[in-house]
Length: 396
Image (cartoon, rainbow, N blue to C red; front, side, top):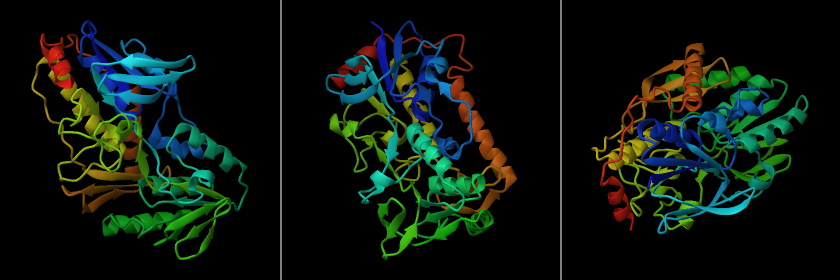
C-alpha cells in the first residue's frame, strides 16, 4: 500500500509543503492529498491591496497542483482523530472521512477579536479572501471624507493603514496603537515610518486600547470616542481550534506543540507548520505567526517527513529571522534588520528600493505557489523498506 500523506490547508505553508513532498517523493510509494475549503490559493500578504480595489491574479488550486500527482480535496475540515489517524471533512456532497499515515497540519489562523465587545459584529479584517472582499465592497461604498480606523500597530495594521491612505486619499484614515507606533524598529526606521504616516495623512492614536466597537465608532479604554464608519481589526491572530479539540497537545495559543523537526510531541505521525505550530526559534522564543515562519516551518516539516520515510538523517532548517519587511503603500517600504534575539539593528533599508524588494518577495512567493514542483529532480526518492512501518508503529 502507498503511504498516505494528508496536508490540511493550502495556504503558504501547506501549498509549498505539498509541492515539496510531491517533488521529492516517488508517486509509486506515496499518495499526497491536500484538503482546503476554498478552490483558490489566497495570497494573504496582499489582501490589504485587494481590499482597496487593486487586482491581481487569483490562482486556482486545481491549476496549481495539475500534473504534480497531488490530489486536491475541496472540503472543510471539521475534526481530526489522531488516535485513529482520520480527518473528518464536509463538502458539497456531505460529510466524509480521510485516513492518513502522515498528517501535515497547516490550517493557519484567523482574526483574533480578544473578546472585545462589538469587534466580531462590526469590524472588518484582511485575514481571509472572503473578509477582504467584504471590506472591499464596504470601502467602495464609502464616500469622500469617510472615516476608517485600523486597530493594531503590528505589520498587518501598518501595511493596511498606509495602503488605504495611499489608494483612497479622499478618506480619513487613522490607526489605533496600544503602545508607541513602530516601537520595535530602530530609531531611524521609526522616523521613516512616522514620515510616511505624515505624508499619507494617517492619524495615529498611540497608547490607545480599544474596548468596544460600534457601527460608526470605537470606544477607547480612557473613554474617548473615535469616529470610524469602517473599523478594520488587525490586533492579532488566533489558531484554528480543531487541533486542541482533536486531542493534540497544544500551547495556550491553541498552536500544536512540536519538537525541533515540527513533529507533534503527543502524536508522532502528525506534523505542523505555519501559524498552526508552536515552535521555538533559535533565539529560544516561540516563532511569531507570519509568512516567514510559514516558510521556516514548512521546510523543516517536509524535510523531516521525507527523511524519516526514506531512511535518511533529518536535516535541521534554520529558524532564525533576519528582518521585518513592511510595505508603506506601493512606493515605500521598510526593511528592518534584526539580531539573533529579534532586536532591531541600527541599519535599515527604506523607500523605493525597499518597496521593490518587497514586491520581489511577493512575486517569488507567487511563482513558488504557481510552480509547486519547479526543478523536480529526475529521480525522486523511494520509501525505505521499513520506514512506513516505523511511522505506523510509533503512532500506534
